[in-house]
Amino acid sequence: AGYRVIGTASRRRAEMARQAGCEAIIDPHSGNVAAAIVDAAGGTGVDAIIDLDFSSTSKMLPSGILKPHGVLIGYGSNEMGAASFNFRNALFNAHRFSFFVVYELLAGERELAWQRLHSAITSPRGLAIAIDAVFPLDEAAAAHHRVESGEALGNVLVAA
Image 1 (cartoon, rainbow, N blue to C red):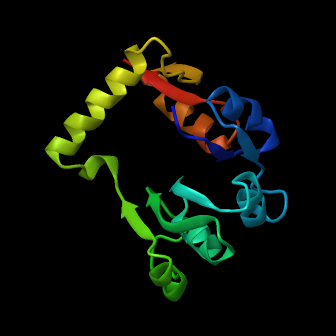
Image 2 (cartoon, one colour):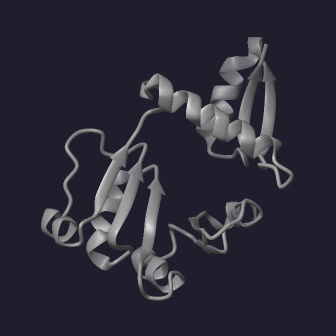
């Protein structure tokens, strides 16, 4: 409650994003994504960005997608080496950056994440988790290929 979620999803995945709670959905392949984000945010940019591709998103910061004092939370980047961004823009807008890899969370952070996840899953509103396919353990390679294909609409699980 209190958050307005703007998401990016291809046309093929837009309905999933809507069902997940996105109020505005931007197709990342259809033009000026930065302008669409600013427009969806009412012309002011957003307070926080949670993103898988720091290298692309950080380049859009000078376009005003992130409000002053906003935070960009990254958990991946298409460019895994040196990523450049407009330092002056980030400095004078007091932008904050936070990065994480699930496997590197500190014990207390991991415990808090599990508690929050459990709470979200068991709450009356629930956390909807889209499942595309479940593969038996001996078909783990097929599950991996399903993910790599880009065709999965939801999570691909491997069950023992």
